[in-house]
Length: 265
Length: 270
Image (cartoon, rainbow over all chains, first blue to last red; front, side):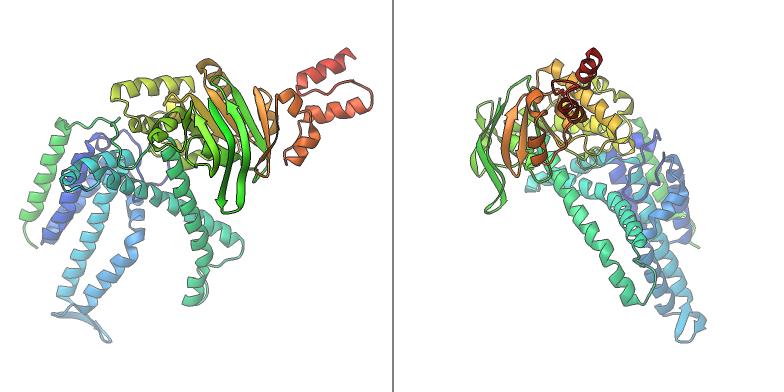
């Protein structure tokens, strides 16, 4: 059975992207996310959007899953877009009571929406095609120069990886608890704002308790299997940069350059 | 040898989880601990490889005291633990990565690790799942992965803490048979913790725990016939023992049987 993959959840497949070196994927996705802030044209963003859709399809993920991944940032996305849309000074194109939509506001809202969406899409591609262990290994290798300044890079990497592993687990658990509490008469979507907020207590308390319990058990199991914080470990997974990695590096550079140079609209 | 010498442990001051526990597990020996909820079974599991340290008494693993900081890592290498819920033990996102995790921790190089993983996964019949996610496996298969993840580190002793508690009866039997067949061939000392009476029949010795204290130790043939003892420990007696006791009371047979086949044999001969 194929489960819906969402942000933070690795979707095991035989796709080309799954086979890429994790270090290359991390650096490329990080670079393109930073690069998003330098793109100044809508056509540049459209090009990056098409590229991200191409990567999602190459990762053998469903586009619907990617939109599902937007759910956690939907509120932030809507708030930012509406704020920019209505409160950016400039040439008014539409007004409704005290709210004024300006042409500058439309541009800014579109830019911000595109940036957030693309940030989410590229991160989705990374997490859907890279297992936690690969991410840990890759991240550890990328930040390894920080060892010089005594940063415990192995522990930091493992900590991040486990936290990411728990994101989908917690989502699934929240859904389960919500169903269980609904069957016992808790109404999550009815009543005033205060009542709704209060109704989330029966969800949050068991969720937090379960999360602490899981974390505790995982820590014990890891310790029982010889994991010691700060102790050097061998690496089972081989990380090797191959021709296909070089091809993707070239492709990313090409797309980034094209999105900067594409005609301003 | 795992040696519990007058061990006591409390999670909260003055409230002992286990008290004055004495027993040994030798290499090649299958020792079971049976007891109800809150009897201290899981505490003993965690004490046996230094995850918990005794407040009184000592736990020795091959003469190494679990409290000695210098032997901490070696003890964990020698004693492997499998817990009740495999979902809370998985670190890797594929079965292969999860089995490899322990090997990476003890410094096994890639090629050697690969050979070990292939060997153990084929032994446990999970080789076809190696590249898949452990989350999508059935309960029995998940527990096999958890066992493989520990066995691959080639421990001298294996502690299994209610590993069949979340499984259906068929998977439970399958996992238990697998455990017996593996440890018989590997000369591993096993400490098998359970509350299911049927699971301790094939053990060399059985310890009965109640409220953190060992109330009896002996061979299964003796322990399992003592219905009063098992009831007082909060565990169910074997159906074969209950039936044979009733038959004995009615003078149909003259002995009590732990093994169902022996009971049937006795009835047929009568």
